Image (cartoon, rainbow, N blue to C red; front, side, top):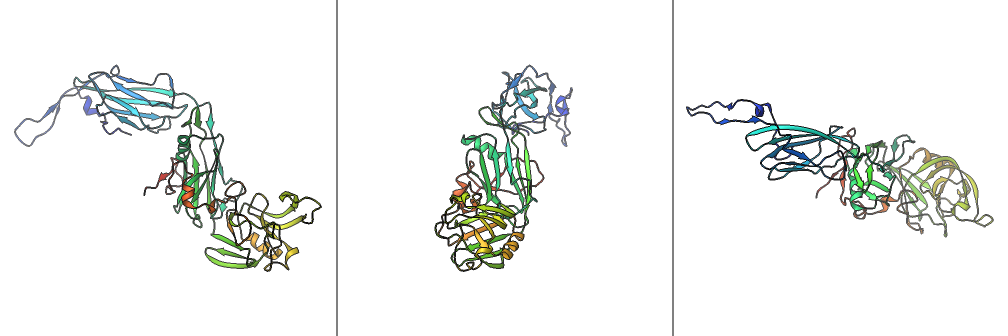
Length: 415
């Protein structure tokens, strides 16, 4: 990248003789004489040995001379942005230097006596001793196809508390999708971030999440580690509404109602959580024990059952599953310990029609609201304006961009 005052050095600048231009009149053409000059002694850089990548690089010219162009290029071919001073006496890097990287410096200068020339040098930055790596989610153990409610997650190897460091992390995270959406990051805590669009993901979208902060200073002594990425796509838009008052579940695919199923939800004292939940996983058979939700063995509420066709929506054990023992109450009253129960036939159908990332919303229950974090994904229960307040950059980003490109950070949306 050339600086705004930069002048590319060409062979014409190094001609030994005068440069003569043609003229249509009889007056002689203007003559400019540019002598080649050795400017190596005129130009100085702040780089000496291995330098601290957290500090800017400076290039200066001795009294009488001035800089015309400065280019600093990393081993990966990326050019470091910089700013030439108004008096052309100095240049200072504004882009980030990476740790453990070799850089080539090319400087063009004018000696102030009619001579111009180039000089080059190189330097290395100190290798990072403390690296910040990232684990991206959802993980790659599944099919790669998720429901439209699936948030993207990042778990950092180290806590990042400093606001400037958090901004650096967000700049190093790229989300690209086709079609593009508007979304934002939310810092759940010092090590965990979630990304979601303002609305649900589009159906049948392609999504790519990438972390690329390799060698970039994040905080004192902490530098970005290995770059990683994750690709996935969404399936149909599946939205399930469980009405605890009418005791029915409504299953919609791409906006159209497909099936209404009689169900039973949590009884008094065990009322099902209200709110939007995201499917976390599915098990064709799972053992459920009352002790997992605090019911002591021997209590009148105790149970220990093998349950079929279980679709999990919280980590604490809330499922949509087969409950053949309560068919008489399904569609009539709430008798479960918090799960949504239905007939075995209906549970098998629901299991087959649902995938991780699909949306299950419970309404009209007397239970508490779904936790935002820690017990699954309650992300969609947070209003968008509040979600934005927990982004270090404090603004939405667009996911427009080539899915195959290397991550370079999200582009902020400007009002």
